[in-house]
Image (cartoon, rainbow, N blue to C red):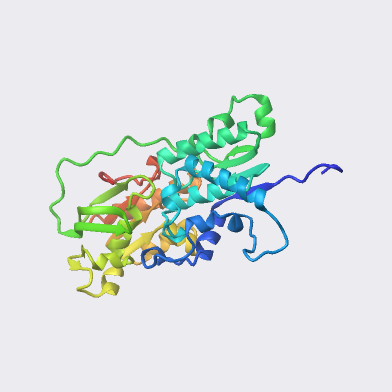
Length: 358
């Protein structure tokens, strides 16, 4: 830096920060289902929290900075549609919702340089498009942005090849690998299996405060079926997984049956031992890689395999390896049942022909 130049405010955003934030917000793997306490999103996005200021600080007036911050927070909240999140505990958010809040926090720091490492990972299609537009708008506003994306279709238009030379000299862009071609849209099979049910959700009702996630929701998954569970961020996909595994206490307030045993009427350990699972929460609160989580899930020869974003934080080559491993394992076990959550069509293993939309 040349003498007299102001040091640039560089803000970095990656998945590691999500892990730190979730754990520091009194978070633990099943914590979102058991507590309404903990650090709220409003507190997490407060002036003191964003800039790490002690609330009992004396002798320093920050009145103007706080006024400017409140105006910026209101704008960012509208931009990312965060108003409904504000009273909720940070740890209660879904993986994609956490990404939105962390992105807001990064913008609130008024960066001169914004470094984004795979910012679209875990976002549903509509949120990916929103992020791309916001990132392009921030660059037009004069923020220097450096972005790395694992998939070419997640690179904002302003950063793609063919952009103006001045823009590319200002912005460091690296698309780490192109996505595999998207598969054709999945269609529900005409005739369902008549095999015994493995998962039965009967008239499920789930509420968090005034927010009703499910109202008399029903779903039956039979032996040998391979389902894709789809929906926007926050639609309840991970909550359904937690009802099935028994991680959520709401499983015991509803009629949830796994392997024919209703939650609350049988040994949880017995049914849980027949389930293999991979999830973003296991990445967030643990230290295992997606590959390690998958191998651990498959090692127990599960009768029910739950794949919640199995390719999260992986590039295209690693994702293909994971999907081939899953497909090969399932091909040798026609009676095994599987449910997959994925926000990208190219993150769905071959052979998943049933779809449940939320």
